[in-house]
Image 1 (spheres, rainbow, N blue to C red):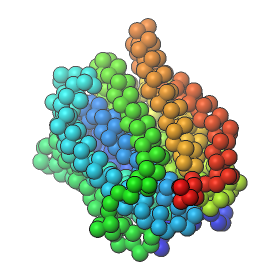
Image 2: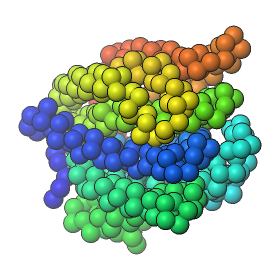
Image 3: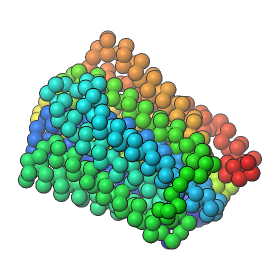
Image 4: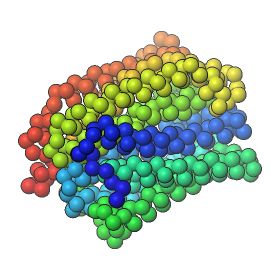
Amino acid sequence: MQSTDMTQGSIWRHIVRFTIPLLVGNAFQQLYNAVDSIVVGNLVGKTALAAVGTSGPIINVIVGFFMGLGSGIGVLMSQSFGAKDERRISLTVHTGMAVSLIISVVLTAAGAIASPWIARLNGVPPDVLPEASIYLTVVFLGSFGFIMYSIGAAVLQAVGDSKRPLLFLVVSTVINIALDLFFVAVLGWGVFGVALATSIAATTSAILVVRTLTKAVESYRLIPRNIRIDGATAKEILRIGLPSGVQQALVSLSNLFVNGYINGLGTDTMAGYNAYARIDLLVGLPIQSLQITAATFFGQNLGAGQIKRAKSGINQTLAMMLGLTVITEAALLLFTSAILRVFTPDADVIASGRRFINALIPFYLLLCFNQTYSGALRGAGDARSPMLIQIGCFVVVRQIYLFFGTRISNTIEVVSAGYPITWAIAAVALTAVYLRGRWETRWATGNSLNKQEDG
C-alpha cells in the first residue's frame, strides 16, 4: 500500500515527504513543457519559439479546467480517506472518471477543430500564425492524455501517494525529450514534431496512471465496468471541482488577452515572454507543490475531525513555501541571463525576457499566501470563495488595469504590473476569508461528508 495517512504523526515530516515527490514531479512536468521551447528556440528559430509560447496559455485553458475538476475529486477523496469511508472513496473514483471522460472527449475535439480560429482570436501575428495553429491542433488532439493523467494523479495524491505520479512524469518527460530531438533534429518536423512528441508523452503518462489505478488493491481501485455516474457523488465533485475548474480556465483565458497585449509588442517580445513563462513555471514549483500538499493535508485531517492539526499543517506549509520561494527568486535574479540563454541565443529575445523577470519575480511571495489559503479552503470543501476572489482579481481587475494602463504606456513593464497588483489584492482577500473561519464553524458542527450521508 503506497497511500499515506496524514492524520497521525509528525506534521512537518508528512508535509516534506509528500511535497518532495510533488516538487520533483512538477519540475519534470515543467521540463516536459519547456523542452518544446528549448528545442525549437535553438534548432528552428524565434518564430517557432513564439508560436509554441503563444500556444501555451491556450492549452492551459483546457488543462486548467481539468486540474480544477481533479481538485474536486482530490478533496472529496482526501476527506473520505481521512474519515476511512471506503464506499465513498470508490464512488468518487468511478464517478470522477466517468465525468472526466465525457467532458474531455467533447472539449478535446472542439479544441482541435477550433485551433486556427483560437490562434487568430489571440492576436497571433501573421508570421507566427501558421506554426501556432499546427502546434495547437496537434496538442489539443493529445490533450486527452493530459486530462486523464491529471485526474488519475489527483486520486493518488489524495490518498497520500505522490511518488507514483512522479515516476510517471519522469517516464513521460524522457519520452518527450527523446521524441522532440528525434522529430526536430533528425526528421526536421519543426513545430509539428514537438507538438506530436508532447501528445505521445502525455498519452503515455495517462496510460501509466490509469493502469496503476486498475491494478490497485485498495478502495481506490478503478474497475472499468464500475465507471458510471453516482448522482450524489457527482454533485459533490462538481460543487468543489467545478468552481476550481472554471476559475483556472477563466484565468488561463484571461492570460490569452494578456498575450494579446504582449503579441502587439512584436516577435522578439513574444519569444522573450515565452522564455520567461517557462522560467516562471519553474520558480513557482514550490508554491504549486505545497498548495497540493495543503489541500490534501487539510482535507484528510478535517475528514478525521482534527481541526487544530489541520490549521497547524497550514501554518507550517506557508512557512516552507515562503522560504523556498525566497531561495528560488534569489537564484533566478542572480543568473537571469545564463538561464535565458538556455532557451535562445538571440540577444533581443534575452533582453525582453530579462525585463519580464525583473518586473515580476520579486513579487512571487504574494502568491504564497494566495496558494496556501486557497488550498486550505478547497481542502475544507469551500471552492466558491477562492473562485470568486481569484476570478475577480486575476480576470476582471487585471483586464480593467491592462485596458487603461496600456493606453497610457504600452510597455513590458506596464503589462507586467497587472500581475503583482492583482496578486496582492487576492492575497489580502484569501487571507481574510481563511482567518474569518467560516469553514471551521462548518467542520466543528458536522463535516460535509456526514451531512451528505444524513441527507
